Image 1 (cartoon, helix red, strand yellow):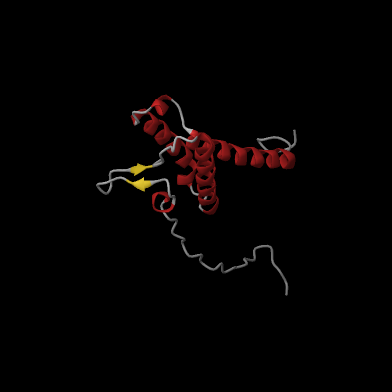
Image 2: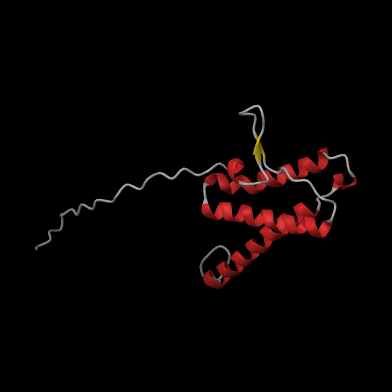
Length: 138
């Protein structure tokens, strides 16, 4: 077969079905939709047991649930999800009328620590692979 400079190759690419991403409030155990319907999302619906160690373990568990969700659904909406969760963590602490009101509990500390642990591991791999966090060779 002879090819000409102006020849065109037509490739048929099968259309990929659009996957519906489940809403985080319907998927993550620590979130829920506010009532009445359409009035927003509660991004952090977790109470402390008052036992720091147990609460940290619960926070680690919830963080892995969150990380699994964003790993399976890396959407634009997922990029802002952590900020919404942290905002509601602070809001909840301010609303609670307990001694823990002015600081995060073990649940929040555990959650954020676990997310940070995964972020550090990811960045270690990025730096080792690319040379620096922005990419390319240092």
